Image 1 (cartoon, rainbow, N blue to C red):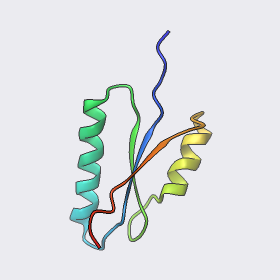
Image 2 (image 1 turned 90 degrees about the horizontal axis):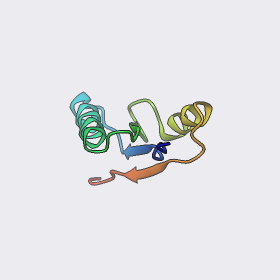
Image 3 (image 1 turned 180 degrees about the vertical axis):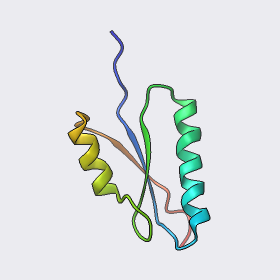
Image 4 (image 1 turned 90 degrees about the vertical axis):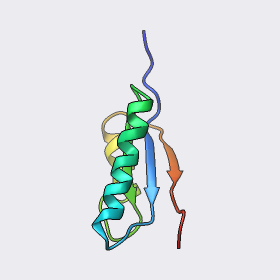
Length: 76
């Protein structure tokens, strides 16, 4: 029996520029492609939804009691 890996939640700062959110989504897709079987989701602290708390609630409701949060706070 194979075990499902803990989901990965990318946590970006957020921006009013929609290109920033698309870049985060593209990174999530790339990580997901590199890690088949690992759910990879994007979240943002500001300006874009969903926020990390909402993503974690949805994951818990889907039966994932744990997740790995990866901060993407690369610029200010």
